Amino acid sequence: MAKALLGYVGGSDPRLLAEMRRLQQRVQDLESELGRIQAENDALAAAASHDRIMESVDAHQAEPALT
Image (tube, one colour):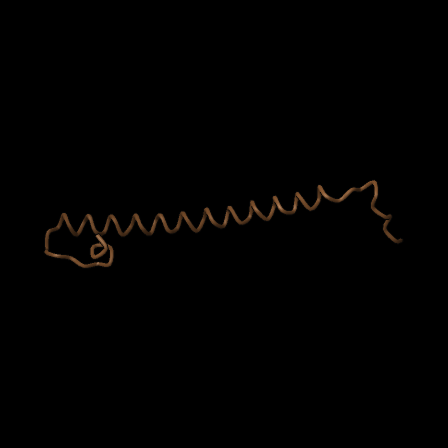
């Protein structure tokens, strides 16, 4: 399997070549999806962290801004 993913072809069988290309495309698609999901997760984590910081600030006890 690893040899197939690296581009090794053990013969000239067109079905094997087609399957290898299909698997390589699938791996690329999954890697792209993983990158997109990781970026989305990072954005959600940053937003959640920001929300926690904003919730921890008590507006009633905060000092007034200087004018």
